Image (cartoon, rainbow, N blue to C red):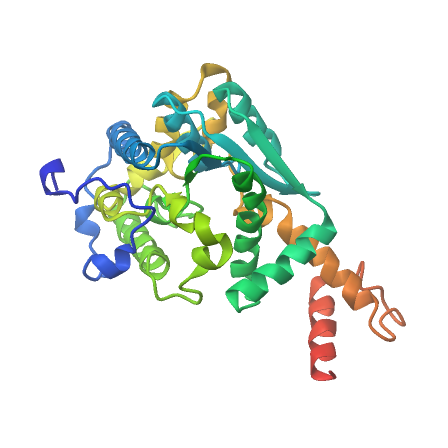
Length: 334
């Protein structure tokens, strides 16, 4: 596929690729012909630059970037700065979080105002209730994905001329982020394996008809149309489905890393003193922000206060299986 046959670059906040491209879940490992990570990094650089430029031009105002501390959001922030923007960086953390240091280092090196919103345990519980009400579900991953967005509204409310809100969401799905391969990246078997994994995840996530179709409007109200999923477009899908495993998995400092080409692009875009951030690993924001830990502690505290709960063992220290069983039995007995 050449640039002439790609979908037009877009400034839309996101596109439901599954609904717009015919059967993206159908296996097509033969499309993954680009094996050179340097060439793939060049394509990623160009696509990110033109995508972010289109968005900034459309929305104007003062942009923001959801800066989790992972490579995807750091890269998006660096590209925006390269284009002359100065987005306000927003990072949501709790006690037990792991990525604040990386986010702070990136924001400082890029010269960005950095709003670190530190949630107390009580605030996490209150936000959880609000998210559950807004989404109409208590599903774990939906709720813990919603909490940071709801918390980030504090910063959005304080920016009088808020423009686009940039997010690195979607990169993992199309670039195999967080995945491990059972075959060598150079093998044909790995190409089949990666193609299957990426297509299944993208087909499931890049669609409107999900558990909560109105997820972002329900949480962000007037800000929903400003939240930009930089990597979730038809054009990005068309570019990324050409990447073979050898372009996406490589060795850095004697360690196999994912999203290799994107990390190369990010390293080249960052100031030299922080380009090590391109190679940092992180968990999903639900874990890296500390939200899971805070809610798990809240669950243990609730279990510990059930009638008779500490007769034999202490829910604050017993294994997670016992805590989960206690909570389920309390539901059965309600």
